[in-house]
Image (cartoon, rainbow, N blue to C red; front, side, top):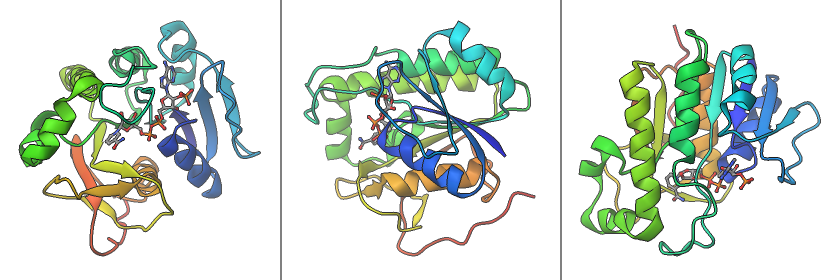
Length: 224
Ligand SMILES: NC(=O)c1ccc[n+]([C@@H]2O[C@H](COP(=O)([O-])OP(=O)(O)OC[C@H]3O[C@@H](n4cnc5c(N)ncnc54)[C@H](OP(=O)(O)O)[C@@H]3O)[C@@H](O)[C@H]2O)c1
C-alpha cells in the first residue's frame, strides 16, 4: 500500500514512517524544507510547506491513504512557552486535505484527547491543563480543524490521544473512556494504532477516538 505521512519528523510521525516501511508499504514522508530528519532507506522524502496548497495538492492526488501527525511545536513543555508553529497550521492543512484529497482517500490524523466531545471525559485537572497558555491555543486550533473536517462530511478519523510519552511500543493502544492526570500513551503505540487503521489491519469506523493505554493488548480486527 502507498501511504503519505505528514509531520513525518515528529515523535509519532517518525514511528508511523518506520512501522509502515517495516510492513512493506511504499511510504512518502513529508517534512519541512529545514528538517534534518532522515527516513529509512526505502522511504521517499519530500520537503515542502504543508500549509501551501500548491505544494500539497499534487501529493494528495497521488495517494489514497494518508496519516497526519502534524502538530504545533512549542519552545518547551511549559504551557505558556512560545509557539514555534503557526497556530492555524493543522486547520489549514486539514482544509487542504478536504479541498484536494480524492473522494476515496482515507485519512487518519492526530488531534488530542480533550478536544470536542472528549472534553466531557477529561478530569477537571486535565481540563485546566489543556486550557492553559499555548496548550489552550493548540486545543482551540485542533477543535477548529476537527470542525472543518466534520463540516466536509469526509469520514476521516481524528485520533485524540491522552498525554503522550516516549518509550517502546506495548501494543496496548485502544479506545478509553476517561482522560485523567495519570492517563498516558506512548507515541509508538499511537503511531502503530493509527497505521493499523490506515492500512486496514484494524477495523475502526468512528470519526474520532479517545486513545489511551488499555490493560491488555487488543487483537486486531481486519477491515471487512
Ligand atoms: N503532547 C501531548 O501530550 C499530546 C497529547 C495529545 C495530542 N497531542 C498532539 O499530537 C501531536 C503529535 O505529537 P508528537 O509528539 O509527535 O509531536 P511533535 O514531535 O512535536 O511533531 C510535530 C510535527 O509537526 C511538524 N510541524 C510543526 N510545525 C510545522 C510547520 N509549521 N510546518 C510543517 N510541519 C510542522 C513537526 O515538524 P518539525 O520536526 O520540522 O518541527 C513535526 O513533524 C502534537 O503536536 C499534538 O498536537 C499531543
